[in-house]
Image (cartoon, rainbow, N blue to C red; front, side, top):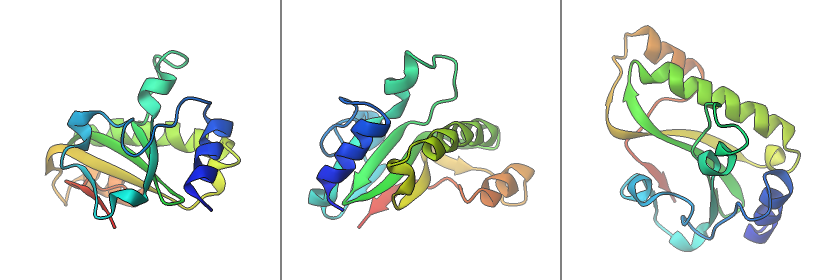
Length: 147
């Protein structure tokens, strides 16, 4: 599937106008050294989910971004990474999973979920919060490095 097909899937499932080329939908503060790609030409586009759904779901725990890389989907949350942040990020993940499950086009694509820390990661490995995040396959990382 092509990047153009991914753009069409975003328009069908999320809405026309949500898709931006490359990382243009990702805030500069969240892009810088946090989301990187060795081959930037493979970055097909992005969606600022938090901004897009703010008006219709102002009180929802919204996920931050969709990043398209070639034809795959990377769901990216840029958030603090301390023990107290785990429950917040997992609430956002539940919000996102409910939407992805209802989106017929995007839900059928190869996808991955990423939590990128805004600064250091401070969740002790022996803590309950670490085990909760690990059980969901969503441990924070300092950077999302795409090939």
